Length: 214
Length: 244
Image (cartoon, rainbow over all chains, first blue to last red; front, side, top):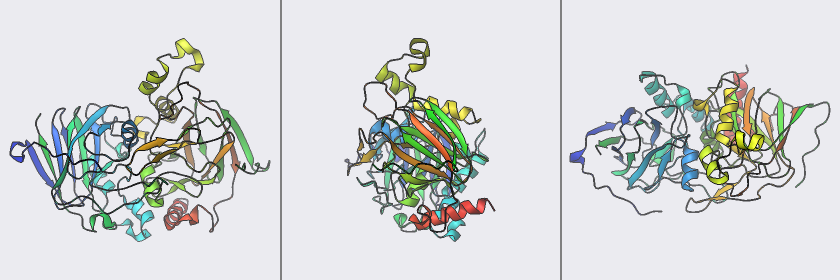
């Protein structure tokens, strides 16, 4: 794993900060040059995050394009996040966790009914949060705007034989990831409410979003 | 490699040859199977799947991977939608590994590799890219950029080392290699035969494919794909409910 990169930004200089409770959602524009930090306040939480080019939100974060362009599976400091049309949206500039997943996707009631017993369908899920955020957002947003997300603080390793599993988290209280926006971006976070997965110790906890000016 | 048994004439519906660098789509009816043959062993087939009745329901690679604990697809796996249903099962596969992690080629990458010649310079031999090719084919069904999601690259293999580094395997597939997609819903299949984005071949030389569609039996209670894991059993349960 890469060395952890700490930020030089101080919380006193921040433009904005907001705690996102477990199971809640947050949608906000981050301007080009601004930095957004997502803090795992209590450890091993999953912040399911989507990014959109604010000039054209149909041009959205693409996991497969981002991974192919960097030639490796995990996101950490130095990772450039690309849209599906290869717009460079953001760069990860600091990371005290060390590894973030972008192939595991987000939970949904429907996928819960597949991964877990059928009756687990009726539990709050990330895609329920995202759809509500989109319904409330100004402009033309709908389910087609849900693409493959980043799971900040999640650890989903792939073996050379092609196996995949959700491992216990490698995050801890106070660990964070920081990204600088390369263009104006819209950030949509679902603070994951999943209760069926040991990776968060079956205990969803809050995360914090902090924004700094250039 | 042992080729799959020949399709009997009573089941056969139609076939089509798609040259390298081209796009194709079709609504696969539930109860039919698409056999894709990598005729010369050079093809990469970038594929997307949609519920043709409501295409907002579409292939979801992350849901498919985490349910089946796999980072690639082969026989026995299912291609799940974001509604927890099976759009298509991989009922047969002679190849063993199909990439789902690295997306399609783009215009910029193709120009970097093969120069910027277009139709005006090269006529129909111009180097086509996977992204534009899928957008064109999606457009024929009223779909577009918002409907573009992570795809399958049939006949291509990218493995991951212990540190997470990707490795594209050259000559992964050989001539005659076959994979079958059995439609479990009325599934819009959109595909193209542009080169894999990580293919290091300095020449633009995409391989063509043979597509054959035939009638297949509904998946039995002991079907290989249905029974390969409990997650697939539940996804089939959700799918069969959709048609009640």
